[in-house]
Image (cartoon, rainbow, N blue to C red; front, side, top):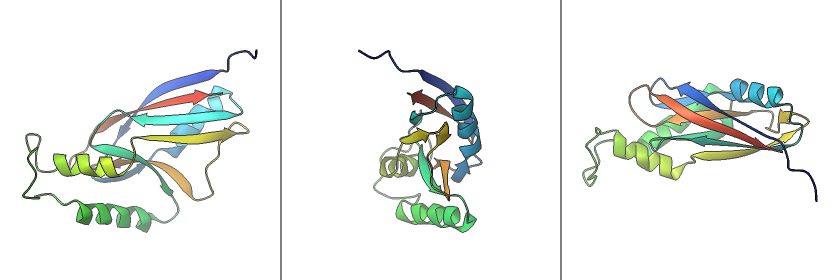
Length: 142
């Protein structure tokens, strides 16, 4: 029987500026590096229902703008059939966008680093109209 593996976890607060993608790859990379874990799996989880997490291209900012525009057209505010409106006209569309994306991500750790591709970054995808502080949990299992 082998010894139990190491694990590390932390919580981050990511401030969004309203709708769009906020990259936080450098903060996550630092957490992985400081963990001292060489091989493992990082799990990220956002503790909200109106934003999501994405791994997406981080080279061309047009990608982020196009994704934001696509989701705004796919799930616009003001849909007449929406019942849930107590938190404002942007809330239910935000819940739908979050349901279509992801609230958690898993990324392998190899040689003490995130095993992301060359142009990949980790993003908080804010779906609400106003800026928010969002809590993201990070957990490494070795």
